Length: 482
Image 1 (tube, rainbow, N blue to C red):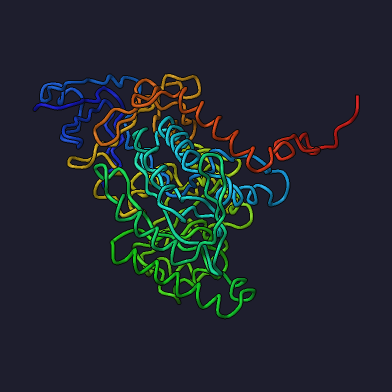
Image 2: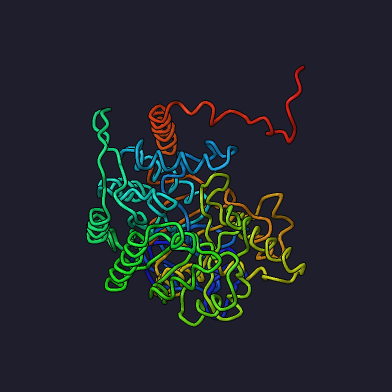
């Protein structure tokens, strides 16, 4: 058999239905897909590969999947985080008033490079964040984001949608340093999202997919909004959901908690194509609704929402619901390192139940491999290493002090590894990371551009000096003069 590449000699973790693990395994790739896998000794006689990747003392596993994160945050992370809601206020100002296409391109490349270095081959990125800061006033910003991701070589599910009613929302456009502000209505944002979908969904060999989004409607929105505005929000959410359903696309919402799932069900927003993020402090009937409707959940154990309340991931999975892991990166104190979030998830739920056997190690790994793929409706193509699937493959170098001695590799992978242990990444048959270095881009160029665009953004919002200074309680006490 002729092949383009052969990963051989490592501990092969397939994540297939039987969860097969081969101690000295190998995976052969041709035409962007997996064509053979099994024992390294057997494949050595069967496969002639143009490139052979020696995986001795490494783990070979599917690319990791991050089902919830935010575009834009990579250039804003940490700024203002110590001052109440200031960080979110900055995001709102930046995304609506201080960002141009160059900002979104630079941030997309930085975030994609971070994911790549951490072995995340597929990730969801909301084009903005929060309720009123989606950058969907013009298709140019989504184009900049998608172009940036494509240059690095990872997969992205880009979630776009309108802001929550009432409208209009003021946005600013920058041209040659000149700022023009204009009001944007729901209809304009919705048409922009439709245009983005038609332009990008499934393009570049399915590297880019588009998901649709409408902000969560909770009890306080019905209470605090004018009746006409709330009715408009309900109708708008249903229109966006229907568009996603008609197109066979994911419909996602960020920030479900305490009764909002009931409301979403009443509006017809649940179902197998729906992905609800956070889902904290759900009532028992909401857990049942998610399971009964086949709705998927993005659990973000490292997010601030998981401090404010608890996602009942264990209870949801016990009823058969698909719960996958998200990073919520990088907002404002967390990265795209899914190893970190796997470890956080285990401790989070074990502490709640005061039971160290809750959320077994293997089940946690499922949540950001095959479970993540299932949450995105992509399990036929990614999430496990099986013949016919796309060749999204990563290797993790076990020859590290924190991963030794060389036994119990799956335990060490989930409990002790971090993203910097990832050595090689293949996406769709293309080697995009070799020996820890990106192959399609110059990392220094991406970092320099990110620093440059961040400086421009800070100047546009007034410099940000106070927001970046160490707060008085940084060391846990008032500073003492010396």
